[in-house]
Image 1 (tube, helix red, strand yellow):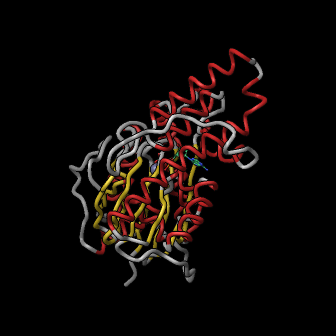
Image 2 (spheres, helix red, strand yellow):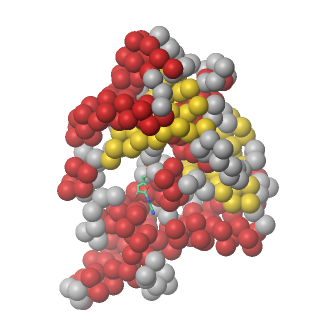
Length: 340
Ligand code: KG4
Ligand code: ZN
């Protein structure tokens, strides 16, 4: 008998649904929310309202793209957290309602755990290289930056984390300083491709062990730009590409120096990226280069699965379902998760 799982993701500003059958992806639908652009960041109340408007059509389209009827589902997986509570409530309440109507179990999924499993997403008959367990994953999203030893689909250990901002926040906040719209990461990536990464240098954090820090870089970037604008009002527009390239270079250096240290400490040579920032083209290139030098095997999620999606939620739900890890209806969303 085959196992078919519907996944629902609503932790931030994307309403998403996807269907996985026996570990293969049948459909993957994401509705973004453009309303936040004008505010320079996600407005939680507006996100919740947009999720409410989008969730029924998004699930409907995911099921029809998959060629599945609701009564063919074996379980419904949903993001429990971390994320915005109001946004998570929309997805979790919808999942509970649908599961009661269909008389199938619900499966609660940790969004960060799911980002890591995005490395294993594939469509039917599609074969792609995947990391072998145990591998080391640098998980970099808008709200988190973690180094994780991935021992199995459902067994992971966090060995390093940010003590302040996340890597994605560093991109987004510095983009805001440059008056670029939210989310700034993809724009900085695009401008950086045409700029000089060595044009400017910014403060580097000195943090012990495998933890990260990005708030000092952000402050250094802010003060540098403020001082340059006092000397030349056109500094930003005349140097935008070099600023983006230099900033991105600094972020990549912070990330890869800790990754290098983690491989030294653990001896693991299977290395993967996951999370929205793993879509960054400069980071991918730099890791491939470093990996070649170090003799690592390097893996990335497909760009479409790097940023928030429900395919990764459905796949995580699939693995939990195989282990009988379903949830009861008392389960509630959580804004933060300390463990994976
Ligand atoms: O994983 P994700 O979609 O959502 C969270 O779980 O937070 O990550 C979103 C983050 C944002 O900070 C966004 O700016 C960043 O990923 N991002 C990028 C790129 N694409 C998305 N950062 C740098 N370069 C990119 N190409
Ligand atoms: Zn995410």
